[in-house]
Length: 212
Image 1: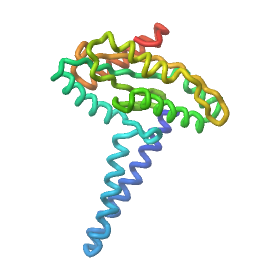
Image 2 (image 1 turned 45 degrees about the horizontal axis):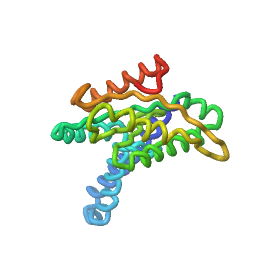
Image 3 (image 1 turned 90 degrees about the vertical axis):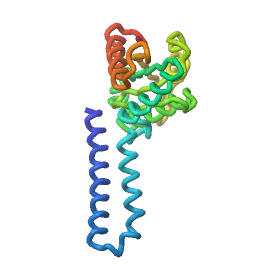
Image 4 (image 1 turned 45 degrees about the vertical axis):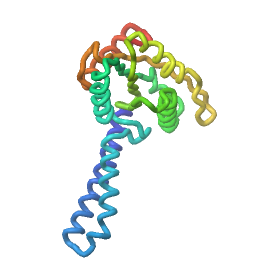
């Protein structure tokens, strides 16, 4: 599947970088006099490995691991301020049709553009992540109460993706469905919050609702 292929590509990139790091370390052990010259290259490779472990390779957005890390910090902060946080899982409906009709290259560009629009719509103040192939996650923080969620969802997700995406002369429209979970109403655990959003998204699919 597309998701498996993307994961395989990222895994191969990480294996290549890990191999490079091990090669540098081996050179430093075998040739101590070269350590100062190799230290910069080693630091670059380690930094790149860290980046790959936290970001989606295609879009540059946070991956699931970094999303959960940031979400945990947001929950701690919101708990001290009695604020509400919403986690939105945004699913691109029938995204596979884009790949089938226009090719994977266009599908990849579309994913990048969706990520950019979501980031722009939130003013890059919130975490926008791509936890899986055709699914994005958006956090909404500093909510006074749960009643604000629908308004911000419409404004920062639905409306931002409503206009056409023009790629290689093709106008592509996307339809999304969204699963919502809330802190503190649902849970105070970041991973459980993610799981609840997944459950809500499955219900939205089943009931054919735009969001639940």
